[in-house]
Length: 199
Image: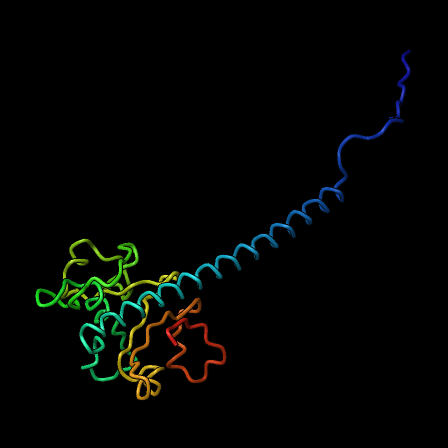
């Protein structure tokens, strides 16, 4: 009759216990969340830098237009804080030169990225990328998207800088609504504005 022999391992055990595996997974999850937070913060900083740079470029281009034409685009329009007059600015800076088009006499005053040019679609009530035909049609109202996908806003009359303009001949606002996508210039109760503008 054969006897069963129970052999016990006396050497080191191979493999991990369940607790060790859970600890390793927890550490990896913690590191991944820290990396994700850092990446999101870096992306947010990059978007802000892009928005500031573009606002500065548009503002400088606008100053060149004003030197040529002695007026701001859209100054003849009645002030409306709910209306975005960016199409007036777009045509003035990027349109075909006067007298053939709506642009200033030395237009274009800057280059634009076609991917960022948008039109408002009434059917979907949202902004979409402009087609090639729309890009070159001065009758189509064109907007320019910020890094968050919202249109930049332009106001020539009674914007945030209106009172300063009365003293300094500076009469327009160009700005992005920032990451929150809300126009804090028309919301006096906004405690912390993330709008990025030429003020």
